[in-house]
Picture (tube, one colour):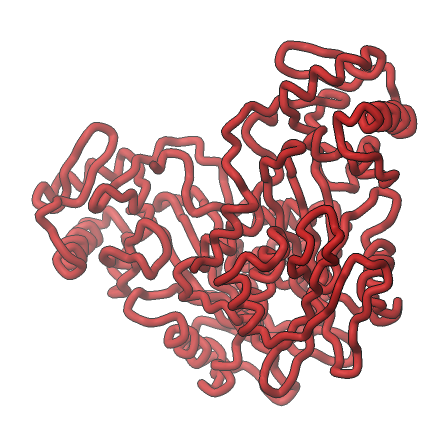
Length: 289
Length: 289
């Protein structure tokens, strides 16, 4: 019965070797040694050194680098080394997404251990008896976390769209939120975590948003990703996070951040300071330089 | 012209040696080697080892430990080794203040390098044209940061009071906020930093609160610590933080946290992720075990 266990779950100890790879001397990702072996098929794209590699320096500029990495992603998808090609360009960056030096297909992002960025929105209703929060239940046919509870709107962030554009798009697709209403969403911070996954090292940043809704509004899914929406008292949402594993792993962090910012989780709670610091892991980890 | 410079200023690089000291095998503070020499005057209170020391294990229990440390604080104050005795008991703890194993006088806290806890409150008014924030200007006769701008209410947290009790007390003393109104303050998180100061290592946690105020309310200082209060548009408060050094060092962090949580600071800001993570430094640092 701990909120903190979700932070532990999203930040698995890194007890295997991940090796850095670079573009222009800057570390942009961390990969398993086994993955490097697959990249040796592309000697025009990568230069291999001792326990590291880098993008060939003659691949100069955003476009040339992106094209080369795109070819690699397609070839590795076709060879079933990585998951099926998705056609969604994700930022490859030494820091924030504003500093991207090129893009790589979403399907390859975790294998290359690049930072990945998403947006999660808390849709909530303020009533006389307290705050209520909209949660979605993920469709049963989803590849990841089928049937799990999810934030009202949540999605990955392709590099080709601005934060605002993508949020409006996700709001429309996932919950039928009109653009005018979606633009009322308030950016309220971010949570971040580093997790060893089957595909590689997830180094994720989720930008968080709050959207105050009236009792008139009811979310309705339009893209088939959500089975149903439910409006729950915040106490019940907190109970689900505290006592169950019903919610998608990283959505727990977004809800805990909401509980702290809205004063539901009081500062004398024994986990308070560990939660406040633990929700935002530094974006650089051991092995990076 | 950077918000992040305030996080850098509050987290000076630790480029000198600080040695851990323990109670019951748990590290509760980090001190300069020179300070340990002064503690050798109290062989009944401390046991000295190699590059570390601990509280004598026969000092058992909260009261006995607190009394012993209190004697030490008084004696060192009298000898002018540390600042004048203040009579405010501060928590000595391996973690949060709930885990305190004894107390030490506030005057000695920084020298002993224990965590220190405070509360800072953002008093703000929501108007049709945006958010306004109350700032105080510190009295010219204050020991620290005279004449600097400060959050509407801010104070250290003695161990003898609960978070709620101390906030109500500080609200009354600093800004004449009635108890009923003070109890509307919403706890919204915490910021933390580690700073090498003249006295020793500051390892501070500031619990943050938001208090929405109506246009009718005007803060009035009752304890002489504040010279004047001013209500400023949030744009102007942000400008002061961004462009000037007019605000007390750690209050800048509390305002930056407010700017992020209320959406004033947009997520595409190049410093956004560094700010979100940098505002909350882990409470343990190199040298601790």
